[in-house]
Amino acid sequence: RMGNSNKSSSRLFAVQILYEMELNGKSFEVIQRRFSDDSFVELEKINNQGKPNKSYIEKLVKGASKNQKKVDDLINKNLKNWKLSRIESLIRAILRISVYELIHEDDIPKKVIFNEYIEIAKFFFDGEEPSLINAVLDAVSSNAIK
Image (cartoon, rainbow, N blue to C red):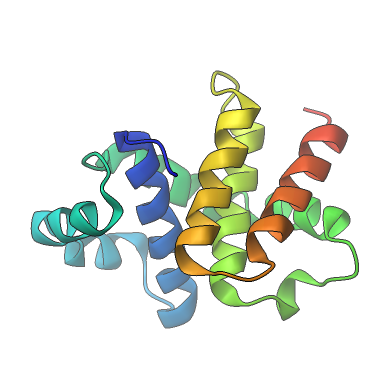
């Protein structure tokens, strides 16, 4: 289960926003406007999580976007037998946000980040996807030289 905290729901939102940015080629600002407080409340009900923290969502989404080349390189290096471009785009969004957070948030325990994004993957998928996320994060955190 995902932690019941605003960071948890912020991460879920960040993944969905990044996914939609890629899908529709829209900017963070445009998509964010659509995520009104009503939709926050709706998602909270579904996810049973705290209220998302808008500035943390923005930090994750913009950070992952700005550093996309570095993040993608790291993911590709650590994706065994896969190419990031061939992966389902929602998984790609989860990987990009989680790897960004893993390498840029030193004050959050790696284990917490792992668990959160594995749970997010489980929220959307019931196949191999959560273990793919786990494997990549594990590899990135073992190999990443800050």
